[in-house]
Image (cartoon, rainbow, N blue to C red; front, side):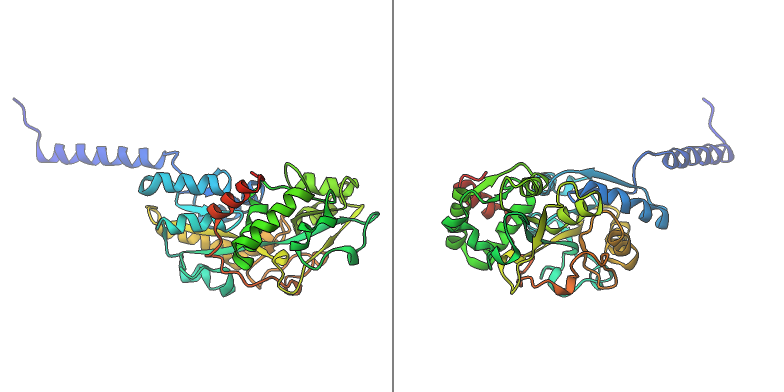
Length: 337
């Protein structure tokens, strides 16, 4: 039986190590996996900037708020995700309540006003959208719009208001009504909307229904109207926006969230990604994107034609308290889901 010399054994081990290194270098595995429920188009604009800045490779796995939140809870410690992004914040609370987030870094939170970071400190808001009512200018004037979004449940609005109850956007608005007005008031409001409203597939269809005169007014977020105006105005030129004020539930500002999964094996790079989203470079890129959503870092602002962030009068809502599952139950009870 032959035995290898120490020199030959060392050379063999070195060769194996080199081969392993080359294989690792050729891996198709990304440096970060992001479960993304924010708009896919926006993140596909922002992620390449981060990749060029850091040299890291990011894979986006896109889905919807509650779908991805529930997937993370089911996957638990075995999730491949490093970062979770949502379009609206109630889904962040589902993951946070399951104790799946690591605390987001101070550097990520520092640029964002305190009210848009949950008390747990485990995630942070990074962009927001304002609730509005779009109204047909041939049928109504701004003065005809009610003072409160709760007024759309009154009988005089029967057949005059449209909304999209199945989307995460409307469900986030309901979560704010629930937090601010309580369960019984929310139940009454939803019953009134069910009786009065025209239920549509999504917010773009709501915009079209108002512009065409099918209905007098529609509930949605501000950017649908501004984006259409920034293009050809085809679906918005016969309509205008009404912003609720005075901290009414209809002035609710819904926050998109970003958090790092506790199970991530790439903690430093995952934190770096969230820091990019809230930092000047990421926020400036979002402000200049097609999105027209409100950056939450005061160093960035939207074009002048969009109502300024500091002129909004949103109610004070603890972003950690918005309850997605309770909203689904109430909307199901009202026959809206």
